[in-house]
Amino acid sequence: MYYNNHTVIFLDGEMVKAGESVTDLYSQTMHYGYGVFEGIRAYKTKKGTNVFKAEEHYQRLKRSCELVNIPFDYTVTELVEATYHLLEANNLSDAYVRPLVFCNPNMSLMRPNKVSLMICAWEWGAYLGDKQLRLAISSFCRPHPRSIQIEAKVCGHYVNSILATTEAKDNGYDEALLLDSDGHLAEGPGANLFFENDGMLFTPKLGNILPGITRATVLELAEKMGIEVLQGLYTPEDLWEADSAFYCGTAAEIIGIESVDEIKFRKDWNDSLGKRLQEAYAKLVREKVTTLSTY
Ligand code: PMP
Image (cartoon, rainbow, N blue to C red):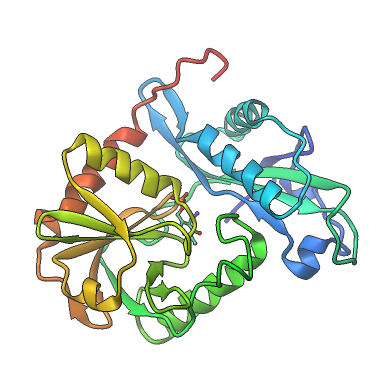
């Protein structure tokens, strides 16, 4: 599903066959989840492939490495270029791109001396589908920001996400909604939350969530569209009283939420602010804005 005999990946500066690339089983990433990654989407546009917010994603990859002491010896520009080359080499335009920085063999609990970087890409539809979601508040909370680097996209953090999504799906829901360790609304296992009330949008403030690049895009679009957004600490009760809600993330894009713990939102999705933002986002990602000749 992810690759075939022809697929190439970018590995430490070279394009190599996906099926022939190997990793060392003694890596800290394998044993401790000590690695960082990104999730990026590329879109086919009239002016060619657009790797949406590529610089922002590689900046976050760099920042994630810095936050958890993983060496990062690349420039954002070279990785953006590598991504365009990778997509071209695999004849992909509408694609999901996954960079991963993983550690060399080392069983200690100390920062690594050497790491590798791989970038792969594959065709991937909207991660959470296109139907409005039935969510359940998870029994798992997001990790406490003093126990991990919450703003870093670290491999091991995703065990929390996997537990939450699996629990929600096993109970017949589409996806989970996680609270922070104080019981405030936090985010989805792989997406940020917004909700609408009385013509305004609300979203959990930074501190207990991953600062999503799509979340930032939604904030920019809302400003342009004259929609007021408040960022704060909110409770599940605030959400149950809301008119509508949505998740946003690179993989999920913008997707409406139908209900949370069986409580349905009163506003029809088609009349919601989320729907307007969903349309604006779909348009934005297919507009190629960069003028750099190398892309
Ligand atoms: N929260 C979590 C936990 C995530 O994994 C993601 C996906 N990266 C997001 C939010 C959304 O982030 P972005 O919009 O940058 O994809």
